[in-house]
Image 1 (cartoon, rainbow, N blue to C red):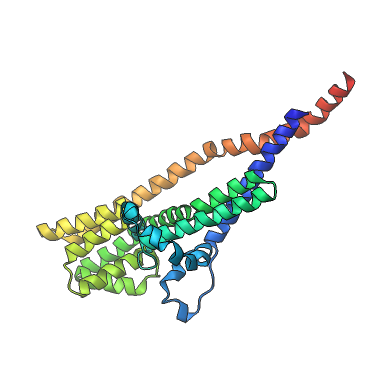
Image 2: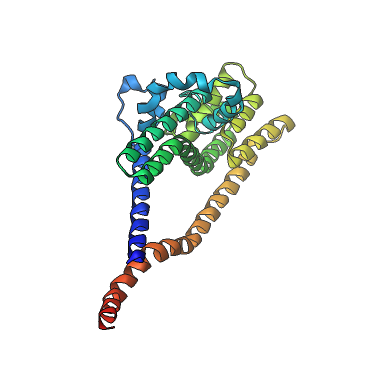
Amino acid sequence: MSIVLLLASISIGISAFCCALFFIRFMNSLEVEEDESDKENTASKLSLSMRMTLPMVKFFRPFASNEAFESRCNYLNIRLGMAGLSDAISGKDFLALQFAHIFIGFIFYLLFWYLGHPLMGIILGLLQAVSPMLWLNSTIKKRHLQIMKALPNLLDLLTLSVEAGKDFISSLRDILAKRKNDALNEEFTRTFHEIQLGKKRSEALRELSLRVNHSDLSSVLNAIIQAEELGVSIGELLRIQGDMLRNKRFTLAEKLANEAPVKIILPIVIFIFPAVLIILIGPIAMQAVNMF
């Protein structure tokens, strides 16, 4: 009987953890419909749960401004730049936001401890504390995936424009004006504006590479910079880079498809197989126990 209670307790704990994790991910992915006046508000790029916690940042900003957290703030600035959120929130404010979430997680723990469920309080408190960093890492991963998918098509369009006689900047301007506003379009639009304001093209492209920190994009930008410095034709270079990235994308898709049967084994063994086993063998085992 004790084994049954232990298994039931473990199952309840796993279920509670999964429900809490689902709720946190749902709140982070939830978006609010914006009107035209809200589009200029850069804070709208944050998730709904973080925007609800944003008013608490001013109370924790003095702690985040401490010199002991300077390296952490610099690291967060780099990560926010990779996520395209450097204009929405600074590293210092994001660290203060993390402190606010830790405080809310502690409140959850005290509440559930008072209600007699300390384990649930610990689970919810930990999830609340780590949710900002989980959301940031997820945003970076999604943004890099968008860039990887869109980059070969952008290179093909640039190749056609350059080989038709246009220069690189004019081709980039025309293509950005007609493409949808995805992650790659945002980064190149920012770089194009920097070039228009007088920054050297090679310097702007290097800053783009450092800001996004994506291997495929960095290789393309470095090749363009070297071609500009050596006087090599950019059209042929863009065509080669586009073919390489497209082959890499197909290879990655085949790899993920081949890994799917292996990855599905673990959920089947943990969640599906025990339930099927209990349904099939449970009645027989109960009858055997009653007989003896």
